[in-house]
Image 1 (cartoon, rainbow, N blue to C red):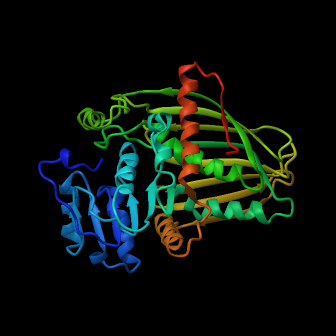
Image 2: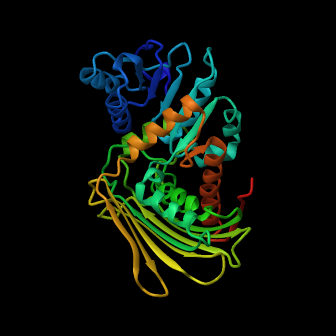
Image 3: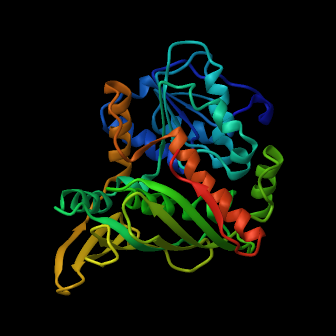
Length: 376
């Protein structure tokens, strides 16, 4: 949350064309990529409630303007890269600034489950000329290659079954967390839903979920986050197991998805598998996607014909550059008004948070299925 009350003194940056909210790991990565794309540091402001983080970036890039409060006028393009609970507060504050319309990119997810349930998200949905939620994984060339394979196939293939595993060890990490459900799970859920709605219209989603809460966060860092936003837990969930049953306008049978994610397993793994058909109950192809394999940014896709057992497509994308592709897509949308399919509208982003809210409700009801309308 960007607030002068959170710091010893307030420092307001100069109003510039580009604004980054959040100067942590993601803030540094976005700043570096913007500069590599040819944008002058003199056009960029960086804001963080912890001014020392912004100061560290200014040591690398002296021409940027920094502060711990928002500038007085709207920037033309804003990247919201703060912790998830602060996203909505940042957006509310941005919507109150004076000046022309602005384009805003929020790094997933749009809001927390608690903020979604409070209904606060709807107040900012229409406040920005270009407001998008960016799930980094959805800019994977492997994922986009599979989408193209489905769309260009003569039978317009659809997903009828899918599975995801998403692991990352966050034990002892000093970063506070809203929970595994609102982080690791959102990556694979977003990617699977993107594939599931390819060539068909989704109608409903039935969610059944169970969660675990092992202690993995730094207690002092988590307590500081909770103090700023009481909707966040002192002991957020560390693992989520979820099943999603989807109905659509095309599939003869319910689409079944099974997802598992964890913050406490020892190895990083990001894998999605799907079964594709022509809309019938007959499996045609099986596809396996691996993301950030070996932690070096390599993505891969393998597609197998399930009838002949032959591999019909196999490729390793050794340098996926998902972040660069995401930034380029956002800048193009802000300039030309053409939105890349992987840039979700705020409303679509809020719908994904509704699935997470259903998972929490299901967990509290001991796994009972909670239905979500996907046709909005």
